Image (cartoon, rainbow, N blue to C red; front, side):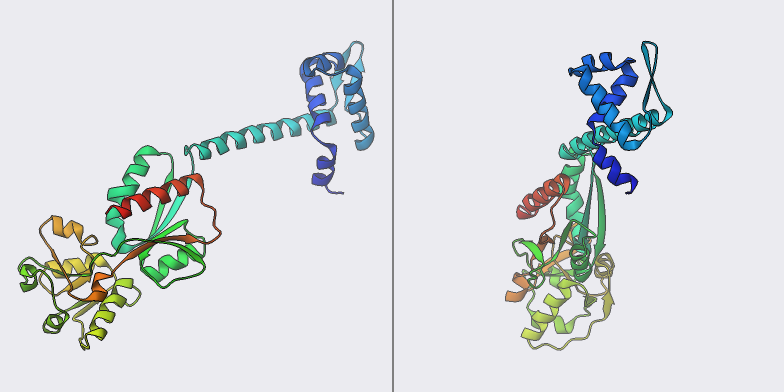
Length: 306
């Protein structure tokens, strides 16, 4: 029989009695402190001694002395009690969002508004919660959620996946992102046919937005070759702001450059472009911690009102 199994068989009560004898100095005083009959304490200790085949207490006159083996058991019991108290305290901290960690997988274009909206309020309300952010293109975010590396994913809308619990958000227009001096900047919308005359900035195929761009071009039967292909939205925005081409993303993704007056977002005049949407998700069956569940609700509220 291994140590863990026989310790489980012993139970907590005789160890509690033994620890109380050590604290009070005698069986009778231990029984009074515990509110039980002294004979109950004596029987429990005697039964434990027979089971272990070790003496646990020794009588020296009117005093009771704990043996070395008895002290080992008392230390074991008290360590367990401390661990239980620590666990209870930590669970209370998690329950009241005083401790914890939330991991989020975020499509690169979502980072700005995440920090500006839900994360800012969440972190101000719960400063002791660690928020870990992993960013990448849509397939990478989906993989992080599917493999439980992150609690929550936020990215461009993807195909339905039965393994995912998906919360979609209202569509925002896919826009042509250009410098203020570009001819598109004075237009209310850009017909797809106008794109063939421009130097275009594409994202890599891993980005969900690029699939929307291809769908628009394919539906309009336009054959174009990009001037640039980049893997970061910031790079695409920098090229567009420098007047080197037309990038594609939502106005929210390019919001910082727009607010600084470096970029202008002009909607693409096409039904597919009007349906450019995003999603928040977690794996089906994954139980979110209190902190993660609270952040999920804050994100859902913030993005619904964007």
